[in-house]
Length: 114
Image (cartoon, rainbow, N blue to C red; front, side, top):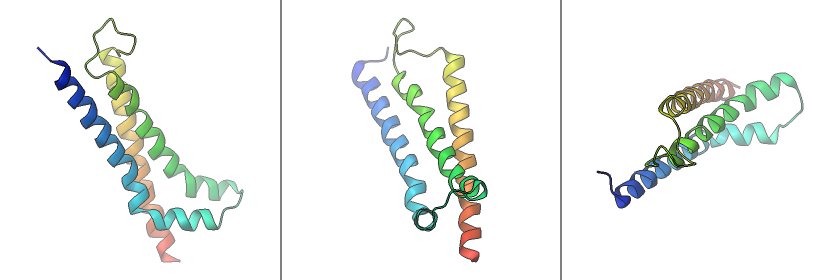
């Protein structure tokens, strides 16, 4: 049987992990953010190549929020997610996050070349 302190520790560990994974790209690629923000302009090519990777990272991290909230909830709880929906959130979150980080890596390599 899972006790309340155990559920609390699982939620707290998941929340800390999400915070670390959310902050890591901003810490690692801070020079890319500074370069993109200082030369901001409204052009489709610039917005897509410079800001879509950040959008993917943020949306990927946000996909994990409902999963964290549903940890340890009973099936009758308002905040519970069915297993299929929970898995879908996890897969979408991981996919979008990894795709965003890979695009950030590529953007950083291209921006350092100039």
